[in-house]
Image (tube, rainbow, N blue to C red):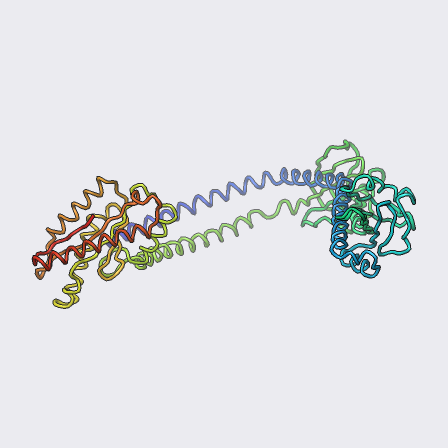
Length: 491
């Protein structure tokens, strides 16, 4: 590239950079204006959404509690089945209290009871319950359907057990033989803990604290804050904090610019039958210093943009150069064996195969030229051969030097185009001007993908190589017999 062209290229790149920077500055200015105008509306939208989400959390507590019970039932039934499976494998544990206690401990179970076919406890980890049956009380009578269906499994809700009135959940199933029922009892500590944490104040107190946002839940009758993300506000009334309670509609969200404990805020207040839900966003937080932020962003963006452009240009040029060098044969300028290997991989993964052609080529007489005229003449012969191959086959694909005097071409050409390229190749080979009286003779073999129903690149390459070697053998037989030179292709 001439110096003038280089200079024009640099000037054009600089102009493009300036245009990009100008557009970015205008976009940032427009964005700043829009953000400043929409901050208030966005604050109200955010506060409204948060208020509604808090209501949904509170309203779904009971459903979540029930879902937890169902989950625990499934878990406890699974544990009962696990114990039944163990008793089937090791029948001796049925009457071994210590072993049953050990199994209970391993499975997180408080009690194991084993019933006979009549519904009477005959064994278990708690001997004092032996003799109790499904007729011993209302709590145990719940399981009577087990006597009618041996494929049944059951689990109770939390209820006081018959013997001690202790809050328990019991799950029961039949063993595989159908002669024993295995019951497990578990004190549902997890459920009780979940019910505690689902209380209104626990739910709100456990919400994450966001900078500039306060969430409060107050009693609907007294207005006292019973749950909040701001601990210093708990126990105070909404009126005391400066919030209004009039003109609120149940199930609706009211938006106002007001004060909360002396801080100007955008507030969303949602009134429900269970609570007042307040989400307050500080105005100072909503309207942060937008000009300063945008200026810092602009400076960083301009600086980053300059670095990115510089790095991308340098890396692109370097990658292109390294890729070219890494995939090019230094002597002939053709693609090298590394590029050839990559091309074979592409053939395997689904390159268009309808007109795919593989050509194997080998330069004849190179060793003799190297031995008699020197390697410089041999290199000239290789360069000439490469130029001929590129002229004839390069228009249809790529030509590779894969060895000393070995070449290959992977091209896309239909029958007519392939015939024309082959004819041109043979004709130009005869007419190719050479120095030192050297001949240019290349043996070659061709394989077309359409001739291989079960497409296999390696099979195509082997076929073309075999055809090339037959041509090479024919060439040397002819040369030895007549003393004439030429290029032969078999097939």
